[in-house]
Image (cartoon, one colour):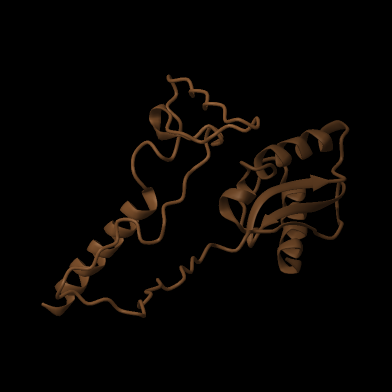
Length: 194
């Protein structure tokens, strides 16, 4: 019951404050369609303020607001209490926990020598997740180059098997066993460094 009375009193006080601060209609802005009438001239060359259409004085600028007096519209009804202090309620500050921004970093594995040459693997990580992998220094010519192309196509890139499996536990590319094994060794070393 007491809370309801406080809520109603607070609502009434805030409504009264809004009405007082808002002011009366027509005093806060000039009527857009009516011209401001000229004030009658007073001997001595100054204009005397007088009533004008819309309740705007000639000295008022368009868009200027008139501040109501502090006592305008304020009345006290017998039997109502007013308090000198107002209890302010503040909401607890919102704390949002957002995921930490993932930093992108690149880790390169060691150069691994094998029967047809040497290679190394470079991986790109976003946080702890592998987002890209590529083989570096792989043979380009002849049969070794073709095998290297097969391994690159299967393992490397953002849609390759390394990104899909997130590990060095990859299936061996048929016909490129030595190249696949060297790729996996360099990849595992890069993952260990990461």
